[in-house]
Each structure stands twice: as C-alpha cells, then as structure tokens.
Image (cartoon, rainbow, N blue to C red; front, side, top):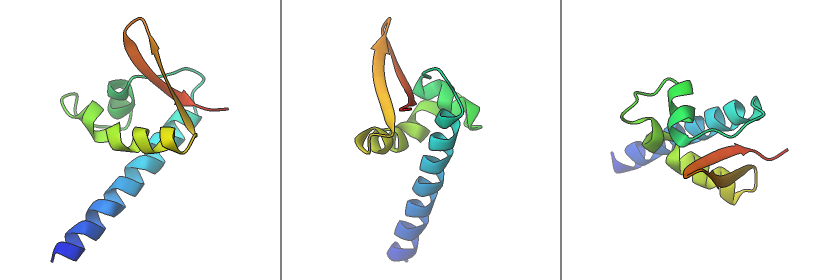
Length: 79
C-alpha cells in the first residue's frame, strides 16, 4: 500500500514538473509561483505550493532561472 502511494505521488510530481516546464517554455517573461500555479488550473490558495517542488527541481537542473525583482521572486525558462 505504501509503495502504491509513493508511486502515485511520484507520478503526480512528474506530471506537474512537465506542466510547469512546458508553460514556462512558452513565455518570454518570468512569472511568480502563484501565477504559474493559477495558469495550470490550481486554486489561488494552493497555486504557489503546488508548483514549488517542480520549480526547485527545474532550477537545480538549470532549465529554469530564479530571480528577484521589486521583492517578487520570478521564474522563467533559460533560453
């Protein structure tokens, strides 16, 4: 049972990571985690937290940049 739950959570994470990657690839500007989550159909209250791990992973892989402008943390696709 635990293995099934672990596998399911891993699949959900992978799907979210791919969605975030594809969304950022289509843009020319940085977006906040909340904006990214909302664009992917998440509720406002959970938008930021639902994409946090995917964004961290994409930044660590060098596919997405993270910057801070006027107090806002923005993420964008590395071209």
